[in-house]
Amino acid sequence: MRMIWLAVVAAVSLALAPLAAGAQPGEKVRRIGFLSAAVHGSEVDDALRQGLREHGYVEGQNLLIEWRFAKGKYDRLPSFAAELIGLKVDVIVTLSTEAALAAKKATASIPIVFTQVSDPIASGVVPSLARPGGNLTGFSLIAVELTGKRLELLKGAVPSLKSVIILGRGESPVNALAVKEAQIAAQRLGLEARLVEVHDAEELEPAFTTMARERAGGVVLVPSSFLVTHGSEIAELATKRRLPMLVWTDTSALRRALMSYGPSTTDILRRAGGHVAKILNGAKPGDLPVEQPTKFDLIINLKTAKALGLTIPQTFLQRADQLID
Image 1 (spheres, rainbow, N blue to C red):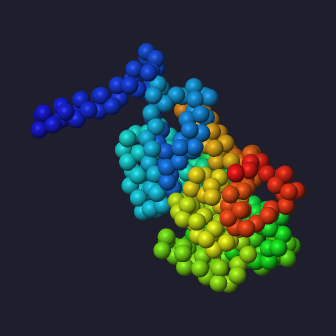
Image 2: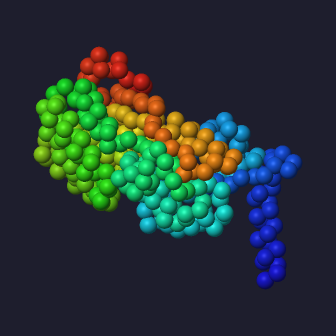
Image 3: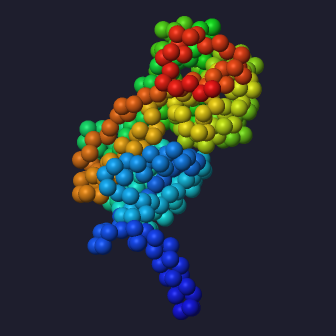
């Protein structure tokens, strides 16, 4: 037993040796946890690292990051949160509403910086944006408020559009709010809009088959980590059924959709690094107001437009922040 214990200690020491070597003499190495309900994305990792680096915290020198990705399996979030707490992390950064709620339930003492939360108040993450209190603060995705804008953009790209499906994850608390916003915008734009909910991956193909059969004109996604996790499959199904689809984020999983419009995920994660640094330097998370996105991107995938047989008006293309061709 003693030999096994010594072997474990030696292995841990070897794993931490590069980190200790990078730290300055006497400098404390801080440890943060990252909890995501979705899949791993290098662009997210890099943005968080950049934000931390801008405030003096460099992974491999004075910082250690523990990464945990549930890959759409929400039942794994509580155990991952418990793992991070067991590692005695100084701060937990979460990506998605589900991850934020799992971390909140797991600890009332370790600071939590949440990102990609559609509606922090409605979902029960914090009671107030100005003064969140407790051990949480972070960034709102303002997903619901942008639903109407996304319908307007899809109509601008496809002027012949008559009807739109709002695709959301079943049981998501933001679905009803998003649909309400969509219906208000749809009435103004002369569109029909209705909600289709999916609960698991097996429901995706039947859902798109039904949309095509009912001659839906396009699809707008309600933000959820489930739809990110299955983003490539969803984009492929939409293209196969010749359905123009607009998503809320240009993450790698959803990049093959016709368009994306929403807050820049990488910008939010970079800014989250600043929040983490403030907390590591002594700030209380409950005193840091929940912040809104400041950078929004409209991205159009010309390859997908060609596959769908669409000719997007030139005046609309000029509005894009990025064209993928």
